[in-house]
Amino acid sequence: MGLLSSNPSQIENALPSNPLSTPASRDSNHFPIRSFMGAWRRTDRFMPDTTAALPKPPRALRDQEEFRAARFAMRMSLAVGVLMLLGKTTAYYMTGSAAILSDFAESVVHVIAVAFAAFSLRLSTKPAAPTFLYGYERISFFSAGFEGAMIIVAAIWILVEVIEKWIAGLPLEHLGSGALLLLGAGLLNAWLGWYLLRVGKRSHSLILEADGKHVLTDSYTSFGVVAGLGLVMLTGWKPFDPLVAIAVAVNILWSGGRLAWRSAVGLLDYSDPDTGKRIREKLDSICNELGLHYHGVRHRTTGYREIIEVHLLFPHATAVGEAHRLATALEERLPRDLGKPAEVITHLESLEDHEHVHATEHYTGRPE
Image (tube, rainbow, N blue to C red; front, side, top):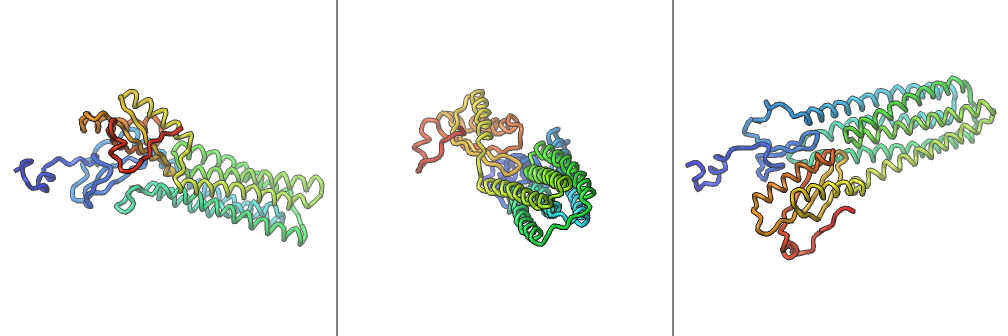
């Protein structure tokens, strides 16, 4: 009977299936799959994926290249971290320096944190599942918080150990060899931190950025320790060693606190004012071009992509199809204009009576 059938299931089965039609289905037989850049498509369990043989667009290929670069950077960070740990262990046993002990402790934390960050990076890029419809990207905030907490614990441990060593006495030896070994480790870490930050910003990965900042902090720590050991060798005054170790502990305590804070505000859906300003600028431009009015803009980040909600206002006489066409045009264009992964969710309202339709007052603000 085709589309004239009175049976709704027959009508639905007669309609052509479009796997790219909706971000999510109300039917339990369909669930969304999200690509690395946050695009959604509907997958049917009982029908083959007709898009599998289609060539991938240039953006998808670029996204896969960025993902591979991010995974390679994380593996490199883990390998270099283990190498640094071995070098600093050797330097500590050579010298008995409290300052080198503090740097060694930070490297232990770094290796543990990077191992967890590698797991988090892999999990964050997994496609969405029926029970995790928004994907796993927010694990990046938990990863940053875990790394920050580990750094804080290391800083406290360093302070306790340094004070105990200072009280017990400061037997130091082979400072020159230990300082040279630590200087080499610091230079390597400085390069690695720059590389991780570069790849993290390019791939919009909070996990890699957090790791890169930690590695850079580790390199600054190494340079500070080398300076402290140099002062001990130049002056012969041994208390320079524990004083430098305490300064290192305070520095990494501050770094760990900032990472933990960034994790907390991310989990609390902090809306970055600079990002909000860019969103408003792009929305003003697009809506002026499309002849639209808007309000009720909210935005938050998952640590990888931006989630943007916006209410669009249409004249009462506008056809639903035309309103949907314009809303879809805005949803697709805004991420491109922002130049970053984003999911835009629109809500259509009548321009004339939207205030009277809502039973309670609703949010109508815009980013400043």
